[in-house]
Length: 364
Image (tube, rainbow, N blue to C red; front, top):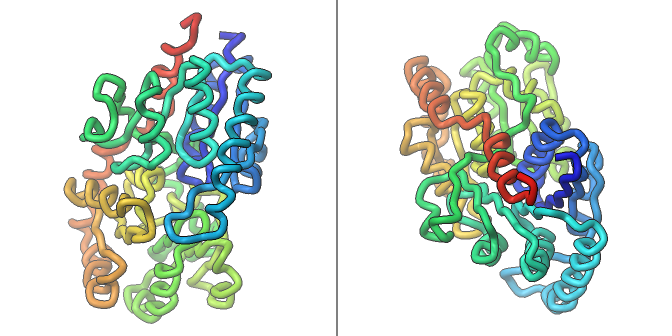
């Protein structure tokens, strides 16, 4: 497949960018001579993350429609029109054989134009409740790769392929390396570590909770490895100590997961897929500020399989300490959770998606 030419598009958040990168990396691993291009939204994080991963990217002028009143919405029709024209130009110049979308603003314009131009498209939906972009693109897409059962409620059943969500290829979770990982972050290798994840930008409510519960964690004899997000780092960096490591963003996620004994996390679909692969006991605090409360539904899917515990933001004051204690201090609960997570893991998701992608290529 030396002549394979594929465009990937997905962005706005890490939840859209990293799946696209994982699929592209797997395709490049199998076919080093393939010509791959990314398309993203100008000014969004994909314009930095994609080149850092070694792929070229083109930016188009597009932004999301704000659900609440915003003057930015006045420009939306103009941006949409220009982004479609830009997408047309990119498609004509690059001549891809397939276009892959993982959600986000740029993905919508690019894939819709590709569909109008009769170029095969594949979309990958990470969540149990699909985003607006992918719902709009579903009818014209050849294949739809999903991570959850029951997606025929939103997409044409004959197009759905259950693949799981792509995870980082270098995730490491061997227990024998845990002491090394803890030392890497300047923590005591003999003490348990609580890893706190609030997403790539950080989570305001989770950060406030962790700051408030320092004495509680100390009483349970847990060290903290706390990714607070770039937006909140200046607010919390002064809390760093021998037993608390506050970081804005962690690139070495495989080391982070390996260091963990217990994890507190948001419930983005990509993060949950990684948590299943690393199989560490986890307490999920879904973000309530997402479309159709999809993080809650993502988390509930794990809870129903006894693979995670769940506390919603409105219940943190009353339920957090008891719920966390039941995870942090009960080895039987931890063991059951690890086994349940392993059963849900799909570490080969990127490879499976690439196999489906290859069927859309003209010389497959």
